Image (cartoon, rainbow, N blue to C red; front, side):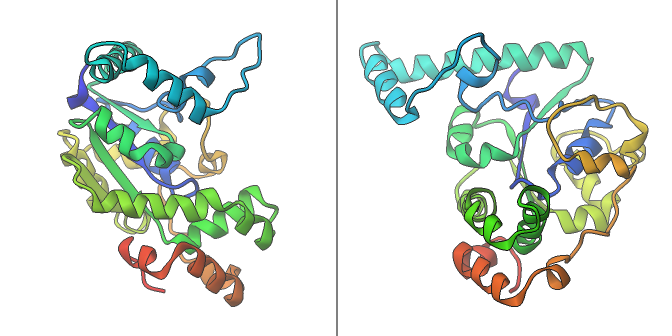
Length: 265
């Protein structure tokens, strides 16, 4: 395995990434397990019989100081990390007899520059969704439909939108931008384009993702209530979100950011 058959789905949580992941995982030549989280801090990848509590910024400073003692330390570190990741991803790829590994972990929006620098030849599928629909879904899923609690939980709905908008502006060698709205309105056309981007032939049966076994793991559990894309969740903010709250969320995200993402307000 190398960077040419590695892809990442980049999105905010509650933006439809589980739907996209399951559709793509239904392709005969793709394997995409539920949210590996592998590229986030390595110390929390596995469960241990001890607890780890440390400041990430201090850890980063210490590691960088250590690497400066090694000739080309940063280059050595990056290659070692790639080797580790390719070994893990590659084992799963071989086990599933697939050609393309897709990592869908929504909170990778925190480390987009890191991913791009680490894997400049990997493919990035950027999935966008109307930021107010993302907010409503986050509110209803994680915050008991409480507007204020959802606003205070600003990372996913506000920071995520800003970071992904900034990522769109940056030079990325292999990037495909799609919209959740297009995935559910014109799934055949949209997924066919994604397959082409991945160097794969489109398989119409993959749209009926509910007919395939995807295993258990992190992700939207409600996705299992449907077997194919549907349009029921489109534009829910128009009826479910108070206008004053909508205005506050827009201001916190920034009208310019929302425009950069391609949505009108």
